[in-house]
Amino acid sequence: VQLVESGGGLVQAGGSLRLSCTASRATFTINVMGWYRQAPGKEREFVARVLSGGHTTYADSVKGRLTISRDNAENTVYLQMNDLKPEDTAVYYCFADRRFTWGPEYDAWGQGTQVTVSS
Image 1: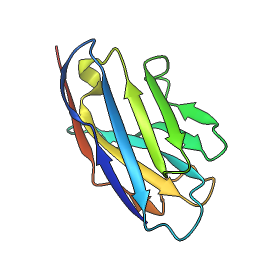
Image 2 (image 1 turned 45 degrees about the vertical axis):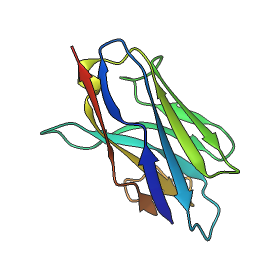
Image 3 (image 1 turned 90 degrees about the horizontal axis):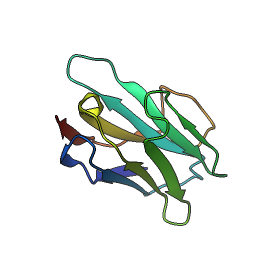
Image 4 (image 1 turned 60 degrees about the vertical axis):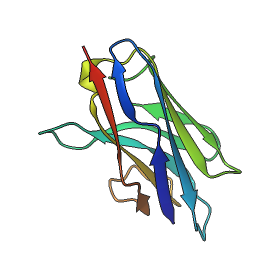
């Protein structure tokens, strides 16, 4: 399976961005998709995930500001990011897996998309 991300960019604090990630060439049912992020000098951290049935989970730091959603027919996951803060600045990585797993090993990772929030 191959994951392709889009939607990153530069935004001012308080602004919004929407990330997309589409899976292609999957030979199995993708049961979980989601996002991690990695800021400069920090470890990669979990952001959010969505199961094929629609159940969602978020990191405490993003609850109420970021919303994950999924189009199962298109094998696409979205991350709507509102009220962005400078500390949200990071490279955002999409992931996908056939298992209902918490990782950190997944069937596939995206290449990453940069999100920069200026103060």
